Amino acid sequence: MDFGKTETITRNGGKRMSADEFDVATAEDEADRATEEATEEATEEATEEATEEAPEEAPEEATEEDKKKVAKKAKKVAKKAKSSEKEADRKKPKSTSGTGKRGRPKKEPREKMIDSMCKLAKISEIPPLVSLFRSKGGANETMKIKDIAIFTTNSPGDNNKKDGEFIDELAKECSLRNSIHLSAEVGFKHAKKVAVQILEAGRIYMPIMVAKLTDGTQNVECWTGRHRLAALGILYGPEAEVPVVVESMSTQEARDACVYANNARIVRAFEKIEHKAVKAAEGQLPSELKRDELYKRMVNIKSDVPSFCMTSVLMSKVKRKISGKDINLILDFKVSTKGTRGDGSLMMDGSLNGFFKAAMSDWSTEMDINEFDLEMQKQINYLNALVESLQEQEGFVSKQQLGAKPLVAIGLLYPKLSLAAGDTAEPADYANLLAEKLVEMGDIGRNTSESVKDELVRHIKKKCN
Image (cartoon, rainbow, N blue to C red; front, side, top):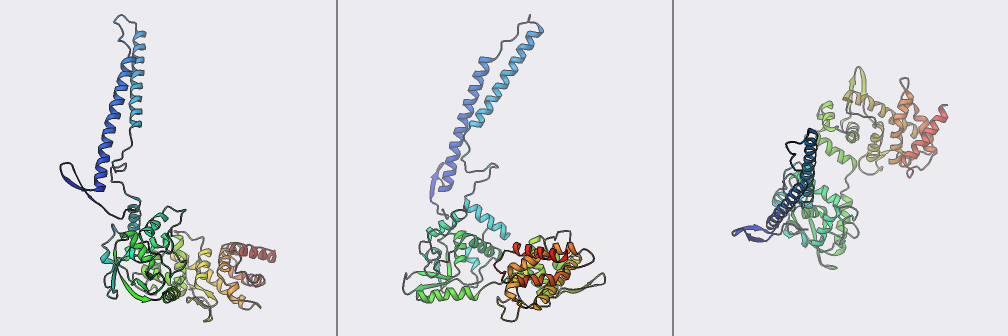
């Protein structure tokens, strides 16, 4: 991969140009010559054919019918000549002038990929590298990206994906191999995501930490910030110099640092949702913004719905009235946002997110905030009633019956129950039947969501018929 290395060449009366410009100019000349030759050849062929086949003019004493025959033959010859010209145009060599169909300069795959990143980050071009590292006073050294061990293998890219070539090429340029991360590799997909985040923020917030190993490979290896380095390598090339925090460590100390950094910084589902909600509220807390305004900002497509539901029950604690009806979007049980049920939580935040994603499958862009809250109230009632019934069942284990897959199954079942209940009942009325069957099924954490849902449907049909 060419990361911008150029040489200077003189041409056309001593005009200085880069190697790339020289190649383009040379290709343009060759294309022009080929086009002229093809055009001349086509014209000569068409002229010869027209001359050979052109009919003689009809004599004055010719009948009207003879004149029509001559005119018809002349028309046929003209049509054949035109067809020959078109065929010659078709056979013309394709342009190699370095421009596309619209006359714009052709871009290399890497340039196109960087353009796509800029588009996602909503910027026109990548900023100067130095601007991304402002206020990094803690960094004690500046190093070239290629002098830091980032990748654990020679081919970190996915061979089945074209984009993987970019990370493979970078790995070749960055020849040092990272030994402290063992089999944990840097992939293109996540590196691209990090690159977009950096461009969007216009800076790098966290320092890049590297270990100067005192044993083993004795390389300088990155123990936290590898995806940032890979992202910068893709954007600016492996020769780019970046500020890093360097510390001398043994290989074991560096590996311990890797494990600590990864374990200490797990981003929970709710943390992502919090960030999304605060960003939509432009720095305010969601509870400080009018609900209909937050709904407009947060929910644009169906995939945004679960995040808004989670914000409603875990951040906003919504209490309001719609046409005289009380709306209390409050769960009667504890949900963990810390990655453990040790605090008495019955459900994990990621599992609750999965429930809302399945239960709100009928959402559409026409649904306003009042319709949304009325529908969500039914879902909250359904979930609260189910959890209450489960807790009354002997043999209930929250990790089993309220795990990720069972909750998706419970969510998938909700629209069917809502349809079956009609105007005279609510899905919450089926809570006892569902709770009995869920506990009877035992440890269903490994079962697919669809299989759990189908079993619950059969149970309800059997009991209700």
